Length: 288
Image 1 (cartoon, rainbow, N blue to C red):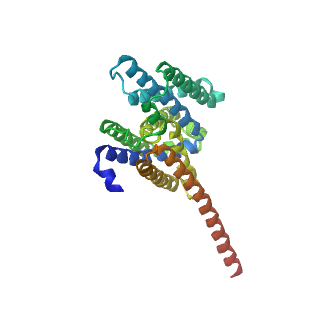
Image 2: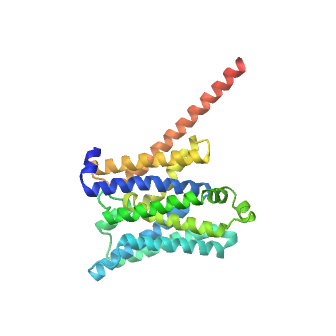
Image 3: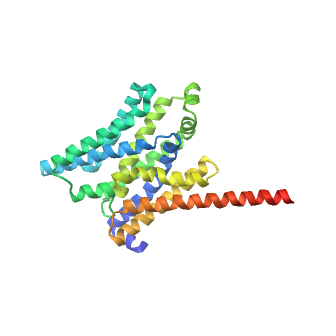
């Protein structure tokens, strides 16, 4: 099974990209979930869809590649992350309102661009739900660069992000440049979402950033353990999704999400088993 993926270049690109996404999406998702910003992933993914539709529209109208839909989606995602931050500053007492505004704007623009292009195309379908054969060598290089940037920034700003995630007020009072760090965090989120779309698809990318984290939270005993388990669950979901997508000729995004949910259900079961074992140990100590 793995030999097939290593035999052809486009499958190797997909596999390597999937492994990178399985690493960086849950990693960033840990901070997103702890900060209760899960809907940001949804908002940015819908704006990315608008960018992709814009790129496809340009290709169709100009009859020649002007701007790759991938780069158009990436640009729209980064721009939307800046707008969310701007709106959060404008509505200081109602910061969460920035997310539905951007999400609605992304959906609205997507509908307009898709309508102007006279409906869905096969390319757009692959962007919506992911595709095993959609990753080119150039895409892989871009996603590799994005992954290196994410890992470097998370490594350098880990302590600051941790403080900002668990106690934003304390971070501001202690002199941490919260606005700058949050701005960098939003840019990273936009880049990861745009990078994930080739494999998972626009409509399912937020699940890749949140469900593995939700499963890890049920069984982990600390934040670092949550990160490790989230990445492990994410990689498992991606690999299962890619292999099933290739052999059953279905978009991998759906399988990735279903496997993630199965892992989440198993985590519930594992948590119950751990609680029962803990009570039994406590009971045995009490008896002895």
